[in-house]
Length: 119
Image (cartoon, rainbow, N blue to C red; front, side, top):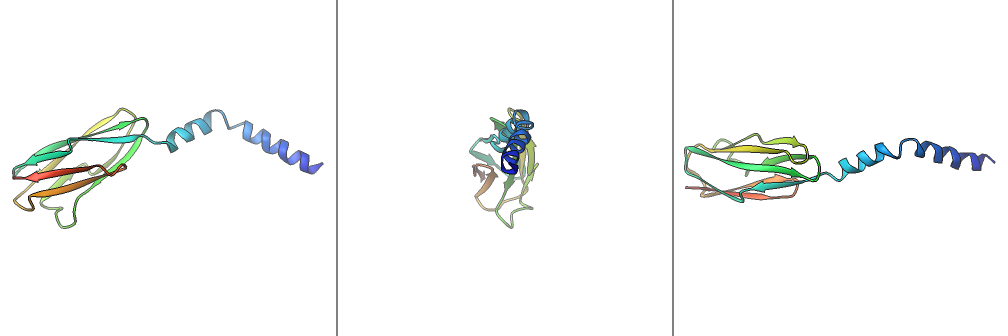
C-alpha cells in the first residue's frame, strides 16, 4: 500500500508546479537565436563601424570573440550581453591602426562570423 501512496504523492507534487513553471522553464531552455548583421564590415583606421545583433524566438545570452593578440587593434563594445526576444543591440567595432587585412569576429550562440575588412 505504501507503493500506491508513493505514485499518488508523486503525481500530486508534479501536478502542482507543472502548468506554468515547466512551461516557462521549457521556453527559457529553448532560448532564442541570434541574428548578426552585416556579415562583413569595412573599416579604414582609425575609424569604427557597427554590427547589429538581434534575438529572435526567446532570450539570448550572447558574446563575441576576436582573434588573440588583436584586442588593442580591434576594440569591440559591448562584447557580451543578454537580449530579450525581439531586442536589438548595436556593437561598435573600432580599428585603431593598420594590421591584418581581415579579422574574423565570432558570435555565440550560433557561431555567426563577421569579417572585418581593414582597409
